[in-house]
Length: 264
Length: 174
Image (cartoon, rainbow over all chains, first blue to last red; front, side, top):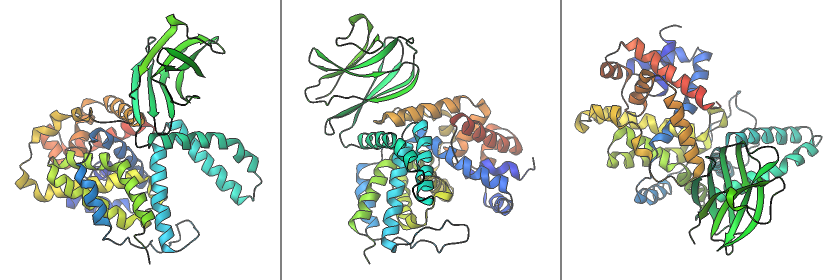
């Protein structure tokens, strides 16, 4: 590997001095390998920034929102040969759509990797459907349920009163409940759930005081997400047990994995 | 022309709420001064707003576009004012990522953070230190080489190897 090529990491983390920077950028302009690495490392560095996350001072939000109200966004760059042909509406709509798109994308990125892959897949299928004039319409339809699930997750995760409760189950499984009282919905998330055997299943429960109400079943093994079927009306706790395949009407006391009390 | 119509600003507010912990966080980590960090964060968001119509998916994800801009501006600020700020050189090495056990409500983010931590843990000590000093410390590769008492060429490859290792551990899509 050439000396100059090895500077690509330092370039992405802005660790080159002005002279090195100039030299590297000249190389970058003619090196497709480095260009690709710059793009990839840019995404990696963005993930790395998560480790520094900290809430900004509350006053900053208002200050920034008032600052942008006095700044006019630049118009889109004139299209180049490499840019994709996109329908040009008026400038205003394009900017709104771009920001909206950015927000949507960010919301989606917060979901599991698998969901992200699915998003790309759905987008590709939708694009193909448009291009082929509806030939693959049924394929799109078959994905719609999954898209709806993602939309529901995004809505929940961005609800103003969303709360997350994490718990370790008796069998060691790490789980979370994501709960929004205002949306009246709760989502179960299991990360690397232990396998429970082919004839058994995790079962979710809502509890109104001491009264358990059977809810959806979740297969063991792997990463799982499942919305609770029931609303949260009088619900005070959420619980998980392991039951025989098909679920139970009453939780088996010895197999209760966790009972998590919710804030009212 | 209603460029600053309500619709935009609502969307921008949402974007701010989704990203501000990361953007402010990385800027603060590099600058270590809340006042400077708030100022630079504001500059970054105003720039994002100005450039919003020029972002295109081909340039990578929105968050990568934004964190790249934030990190670059933070580093520029550090280098222009580093003498007056008298930064503690040991800080970046020893503070590591201890500050992050903070207010993370979203379980998805928590899972993501865990993933990144594991990714960092999978690197060799030198890769991790070089990457941490450069990215979170805002040091140039030459300064990193001095701090770690290693040849510049070694530091350069360790930073790149660290990013490769982390990229592979995270499975980040470009």
